[in-house]
Image 1 (tube, one colour):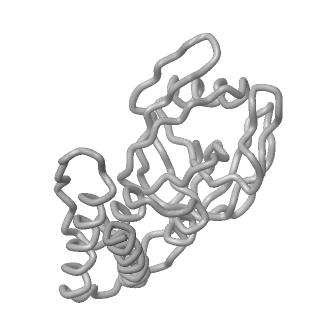
Image 2: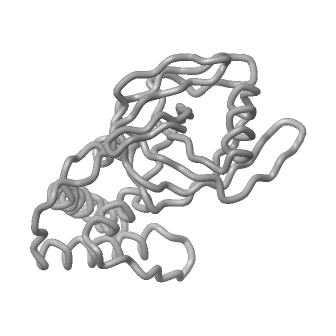
Length: 205
């Protein structure tokens, strides 16, 4: 990995799902080139970038697919290897914007710019409503009685909601690309309200 204050060069994993900063995800990898890349970053104890793929994720017999322009730096937490599938437990670290990419010895390498949320004040009522709606939706859509402890820090809360509330992958990518925490929470509140209205209608019917 090469880096300076603003940019970082890391291998890319184009994927069929969105990884958010702070979120954990299991990546079930069958593509041999991706398996080699994961083995390399694990051995060197460095990161890689999970980017939503613009086309279907590669199988064991296909090549790399093109990544979208915003992704998340990830670190490997654990690996379970089998004959056909490499199950990688990964955690999202920070959001990055893709500047360029190229194929180097069967590994997709990208140059990225770090993409922190813009520094602005998030009103407490916005945080409180997002927190309450996120908890309510979770309790409705989960089959068990689990009650997660939602984070109170605005940015962390916005990423928790994006990662845990059921929504289309395209919507998740839109949330990842939102430039500010305040705007992301506002968008999520609108989505959560609509989801709750639909769930209430479904249950009343």
